[in-house]
Structures are given as structure tokens and as C-alpha cells.
Length: 337
Ligand SMILES: Nc1ncnc2c1ncn2[C@@H]1O[C@H](COP(=O)(O)OP(=O)(O)OP(=O)(O)O)[C@@H](O)[C@H]1O
Ligand SMILES: [Mg+2]
Figure 1 (spheres, rainbow, N blue to C red):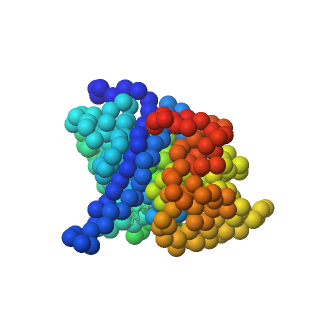
Figure 2 (cartoon, protein in one colour; figure 1 turned 90 degrees about the horizontal axis):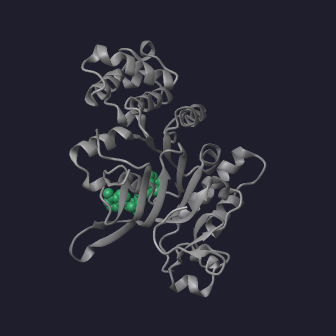
Figure 3 (cartoon, rainbow, N blue to C red; figure 1 turned 120 degrees about the vertical axis):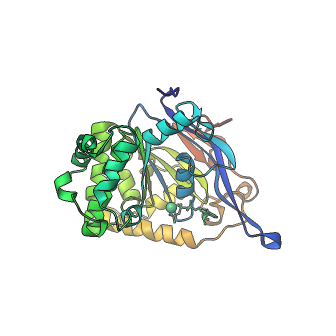
């Protein structure tokens, strides 16, 4: 057995700087800046990372998955630094923390039958010695996503719909009975009519099997529908973090801006408006202000231009905004709510 214990995933002060170009044209891109968050795996929660395009969601998720190393900071999984794990610990980590990618058509080789991925996963992780032994594991995982082996047998990726293929991808991630699944925009490439069924599947797996999800999206409506906690990201930083209710009563002016883009009571229109807001902010290139939201903030103060806001704990949330310097408790290190 592995030596991993504890029940938390802890992201502690993580920064990722990509170095691009060479010589005089060298530039640094800070994709993720000083992010801290904590997930209690025993709780079985859906944690959303939301933010405009380029806000660092994928970079952060790849760091959490151990795919790219942070420039600063650490990620601890069950008390182990994921970038300093021993072989058996690493294997256990990969088994417990699975990923579902954005585009199911890219996740599967078009020349391979889809069921082969399921069988291989079961065998690779030692759940079965051969294909025959793997059948019960494969059937169980497929059943959990509303499919059966008979339905996908002998099929190639292009013979399934995007929604079905994403279900197979989720089934593959379930084979090892993970404690957490990282899903990076799992429905954005799927036909609109099938999206809700996948979102509902995630919700159901969370409720029934207590699997934790990191759900990455720029769609606040589905985030509100499925998640327990949310981190609002803006240009590589988390500006507000806490229970999903923060969407209805935002503290940070950026979250407020996102909320007021929701013209009630039509949820479809709300979605459109949020998308529009996120597209507008996408066009917004880096300002020189110390606060990343200062250039658009209706509550901007002089200090926002020159001093980066600290993280404050207010009403059980973390808010990165100068407005709370008197109302909140300043966070001294990367502890979490
Ligand atoms: N491998 C890389 N090399 C250089 N820059 C990168 C790399 N990966 C990401 N970036 C940059 O880091 C920033 C954050 O990108 P990231 O893909 O994490 O954002 P995102 O929130 O996932 O965006 P989207 O919603 O479009 O998927 C962007 O400015 C991006 O151009
Ligand atoms: Mg992304």
C-alpha cells in the first residue's frame, strides 16, 4: 500500500511563469499567480474554477494533475508533494486523480476501438490480468455513465456522438475508482442539446459516489447548478473564493460585474450575458495597475493602481480586494477556509 494519508488536496501559493522567446524578445507570462486552495477529499465536493479565457484555469489544473511543475509553490495530495512522490505514490496518485478532457474526439485515437481504452486502463492499474478479467470493471464503469459494453462494443470514436464519447471518457476515468476527477470544460465541445446530460452525470456521480470534481468552466450558470465551491479567476489570480453562494451575493467587484450581467429571470439569456461579459474582458489586455481589475472597477481607489490587494477573509470567503482591508481578516499565509 502507499504511504499517502490525509484527506486533502492543498494548493499552496502556486505561481507559474512561462518563459517565452529568446534574447531581447524574451517575455515572461505569469499564467497563474500565488494561488492557494484546499479540497477536502472526504467531503465529495464539486469545486469550480471559473474565469475568462486566458485566466489560468487550464494551467492551474495541469499543475494540480502533476503535468506541469509550478515555478513557485507546492501542491500536496494527502500530505505528499505531488512533484516529489516516490514511484508507488505517484502511481497511487494517478489512480486516484483522474482527468476528463475538453474534447473527447482528441482524447481517443480514431483508429482504435473505444472499449480498448477501458480494458487497458483496468489492466494497467492492476485491476485485472486480462481482458476477460477486466469485463466486470468495464461494465460497472459504463453502467455508471448510462452505457453498456454492448452499446459501444466494436465501435470507433467517430461512430459515437460527442456526448456518448464524453461518457466513455468519464467511464474510463471511473475504472480506478478515483477520489477526484479534473474536468476541464467537459461540455464545451459537445452539442448543446447533450450538454446538460453530461453536467447532470457529473452531479450524479458526485452525489452517489462522493467523487470530488474540479470543474473548469467559463459558464457560471452550470457552475452554480452543480458546484459546492467556486474560485473566480482573473488574469491568473483568484479574486474571490468560497461557497457557490458567492455568485448570488458577491463581494469582489469583478464577481459583482459577472452577477449583474445576469438579466433575470431568463436563465438562457443570463448565460448569453455572462458569455458576453467574459468575451469583453478577454479583449482587455493587461493594465499597468497593481489590481488586475482596477481598469474596469467601479469602486476603484487610488491604492488599487499601485498596490496589489491582499487576500482577506470575509464571511468565510477569501476576497482579493482593497475594499476589505478594514472589514476582513488579512490572510497571513496560504491557509484555507
Ligand atoms: N505552454 C504555455 N506556454 C506559454 N504560455 C502559456 C502556456 N500555456 C498557457 N499559457 C498562457 O498562460 C495564460 C493562461 O492560459 P490557460 O490556458 O491556463 O487559460 P484558461 O483559463 O484555461 O483559458 P481558456 O478558457 O481559453 O481555456 C494565457 O496567457 C496563455 O497564453
Ligand atoms: Mg483552458
